[in-house]
Amino acid sequence: MAYYQRIRDLREYNDKTQQELAEYLGTSSQHYGKYELGNAEIPFERAIMLAKYYNVSLDYIAGLTNNKRGLTASELSNTQRQLLSAVEKLSPEAKKDLISLLRTLITILQK
Image (tube, rainbow, N blue to C red; front, side, top):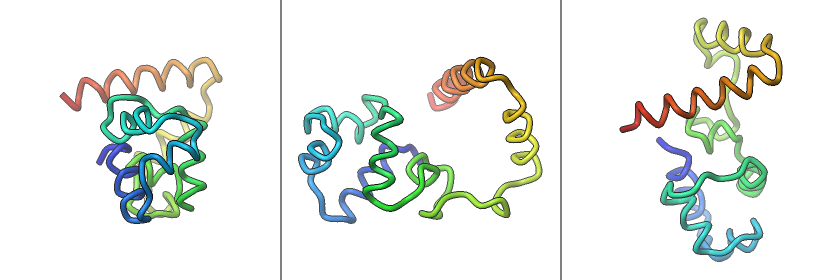
């Protein structure tokens, strides 16, 4: 499930309007609507704001877990733990490059 579906589901479950969330985030309701449709990337700062607003984890918003509190070590497979460990050892620049590469791969795989 894509992050934009999660933020829409959270908004609807909490009986909020796009306008209310847009005001909270400091943007227009039209731009917020683009987040929910997946037509605009949510800036990290705003994703954090949404996680705090709904009292859920960024992992949940990103669709990485169905647990609103986020991933726990027990939920990760050995492969996932090994990959996270390898990522932690990368330089900040290499992490940035990896994120860019992963975004590209995800975009390709979602088509």
